[in-house]
Every structure is written in C-alpha cells, then in structure tokens.
Image (cartoon, rainbow, N blue to C red; front, side):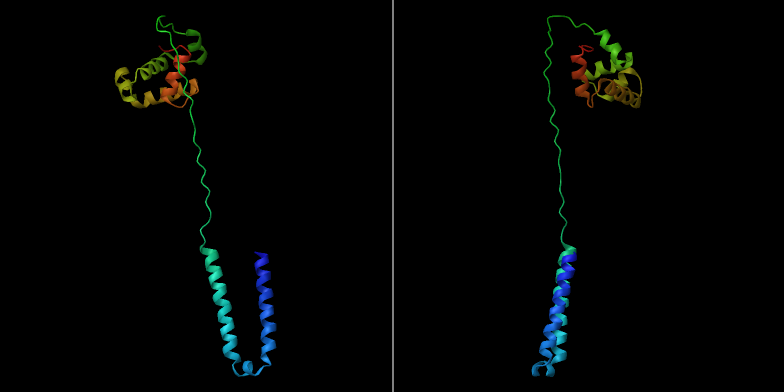
Length: 156
C-alpha cells in the first residue's frame, strides 16, 4: 500500500513538472483550463477505476475438507463355541446392567424408540444411557459400539 501511495505521489509530481513545462507554450496558454480539467478528469477516472476494482475484487476463500476414513475391522467369531460373557471387561468398563442390556438390543438392530418401548422407559432415558455407553466404550456411533462390544466379548 505504501508503494502505491509513493508511486501515486511521484506520478502527480511528474505531472506538475510536465504541466509547468507546457505552461510556457502557446497552446497551453490559450487552452490551459481545458487541458488542466481534462488531465484532472483523466487522473480521477483512472483512480476511480483502480479503486473500484480493488474494493470489489472477490476475496480468495480457501476451503479445506477433511475426510475421515474409518477402517472397519472384520470380527471373526468362532460360532462352534458358545458365547461366554467377559465379566472382567464388563466390570473394567463400568457398564451398568441397563447399559449392557441396551448395547445388546442395539446389536440386535433395534432403534432407540424400539428399545424404549421394549424396556418401558422414555426415549430420552435411552439416549442418556446410549451416550454414557458410548463414552465408556470410547466410540461415537452405534455400529462402533456393537463392534467394540463384540471385540471385548461383552455381547454375542
């Protein structure tokens, strides 16, 4: 910005020197007002165009998209052996009986409303239990909770 102001000042200084030089000529003496007015109009027109372009220029916007790729592990469960609940992990995680029951129903594919109807509790209570369950398991989604529950052998 300082360079532009300095350049503008230098150009105006050169213009004044140029006008003083032509002031002594006959053409300038006869038509001095018209030439000065034309030059001033030209300067202001150029300055107006430059300023208009500078102020109305669209600012560059950088858009950053972050795409998370989730690696889905395949859980191999031996179906020939019966399911054995891992009580130790259940206790370590601090899951309540109700949270374990809700996790089992989520694994069976029930929605929150279906779970609430089945357990005779409100939908908000199911949401609260689910969020606490997700916190304890360290997951963000229902599918992740089921996957982690199967890995830890707390649900069949």
